[in-house]
Each structure stands twice: as structure tokens, then as C-alpha cells.
Length: 123
Image (tube, rainbow, N blue to C red; front, side, top):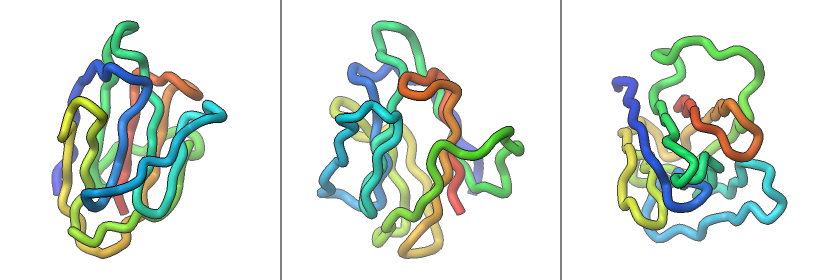
């Protein structure tokens, strides 16, 4: 696997991480920044009108060490052996193949609810 990076300006205040299609997105009613279920992670980001959000996705062992604890550390169901990042208007922001049916996901952000830098480590 290789580390992937992109810059996006989502129309809404978040994007989603899922391991299969046809998922139910967990809603962040309490504005905590990251909300998850076993099949989807909803990650808050900077509103597109306010600027771009940089998203980095890669295997944990290939990413630069991060300071502090991750904002999220959990397991995502990945029955199609891939992780897809998308939002309501972008069918694919980034994607990455994964080896297992369940994948550990760790997320670091530089702001509690509206980060402009999101790092996602798989494994």
C-alpha cells in the first residue's frame, strides 16, 4: 500500500469512510467531529466555503508518527477488502485496498469539529 493525499473542499461539513457500499451514515448531532458505527465513520472537516481540507490516507506503518492520541481509534467492517472515502457529492475522494474483513482505523485531526487537516491510518 502507498500513502495517498488529496485536497478537497466538501460542500458539507464532513466526509465518510466505509468498507462497503449501501451503508447507513452515522450522524454527528452532538458535533463531536467523528461519529462511527461498525460500517461507516463520519469525519467532520472544514466547510468548503471556508477553504480546503487536506486528507491523508495510508497504512499506519507508512505514515509519519503523529503527536497525541488519535481523535478516533476503532474497527471498520471491510467485507469488500477496501476502504472508500466519499461525501454526498463526491462518489470517491480516496480509496485503498485492505487485507482483512475488519480494519483498524485511526484518525488525527487538527481541530475538534472543523479540521483542515485529517490523517487516516489503516491497520
